[in-house]
Amino acid sequence: MESGKNAAFSSAKALPREDTPLIPNSPTLSSQSKTFANVFIAIVGAGVLGLPYAFKRTGWIMSLMMLFSVAGLTHYCMMLLIHTRRKLQSLSGEFAKINSFGDLGFTVCGSLGRFVVDVMIVLSQAGFCIGYLIFIGNTMANLFNASSPDSLTSQVIAFSMSAKSWYIWGCFPFQLGLSSVATLTHLAPLSIFADVVDLAAMGVVIAKDVFLMMENRPEVRAFGGLSVFFYGMGVAVYAFEGVGMVLPIESEMKERETFGKILGLSMGLISVIYGAFGVLGYFAFGNDTQDIITANLGPGLISLLVQLGLCVNLFFTFPLMMNPVYEIVERRFWGGRYCLWLRWLSVMVVTLVALTVPNFADFLSLVGSSVCCGLGFVLPALFHLLVFKEEMNWKGWTIDVGIVSLGLVLAVSGTWYALMEIFAIKA
Image (cartoon, rainbow, N blue to C red):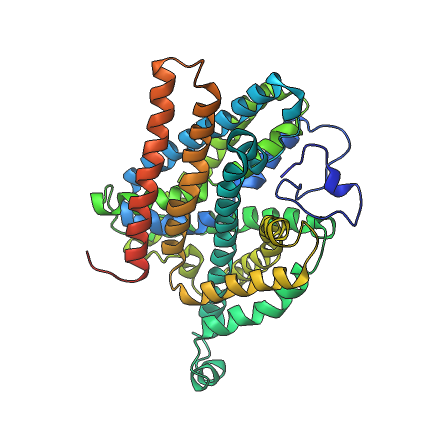
């Protein structure tokens, strides 16, 4: 969220980078409270809406165990990145400009390291935006087409296109316009709005979950089978994905020696919120829990406002999350200069993929397993191992190699299982 020098906000003409702050910062470094807020904003996103469904699939105790385990491991790997950068910066002044994950990859592994990080960031950020479009399409179709089948639905059928597809295509021209904005400065206030709506919607959903749980008491299960373990892990990893922003955020902190504690406190609080949201959502609806929990809210003005608010939130979050993609694509194919047609092409590709994915939670699991495991676990441990290999004892080697191996196993197995779910392949 925060860049090393806030250069991108020094001028309205500055082009965004993957380490450009989403919220303009003051010239002074961030306090502990602002750092806490930045970490919270970087991690909490739409993935929380798929947690109750994941709890239904994997069992609530099993899901809680996975959720807190992923939170702890993610915190540990984020700190590995911080330690790796500090080590490199202490060796020579030439490493003083490591402001982003891509910079670290280049410093440790050269052009190959930056390329791998760039590819994973593009896939993860684009994946988040695909999830946003799926949520918007499914939610709008459920809200307006289920209750009025004789109006728009009949027209949709006439054109051989689902209601979800129409709503996703409806977002397309507006996203082309938003993608044309060359600087994040004009989009920055949308980040604050997005998180306020997120928190308000989560509060409303939790309150309704508690009421329904006390009233209905549906049957729930504590543990799912081994076959759904990797599915649940993928969703959990997706929900905590924010590793790409940890270096920019730490570089903007005033008291950097306390960053580990602030990060740990943030992750702990987010874990509790996620756990409560997942458990209460599952306990409220049981086996009827939908892949997007807001689909369970039913009719009513409050339900309508919550779902519309989340759609508006994700609609305006889309261009913010796509900016790292634009920066990398323009750097690789257009010499780092602003290129409108590359941005529009990126939006087109994301839209086309969103049209082909039917289930929100299954897609979360796919992105979490295939990309986020690599960004969140494999690369931080690998970079740390390469930089500290001469200093670590056998215990340090074992931990780093173990995390790399675990990340690879989760990525391969989770990706395969998520693809089977998406394409309905029976093992």
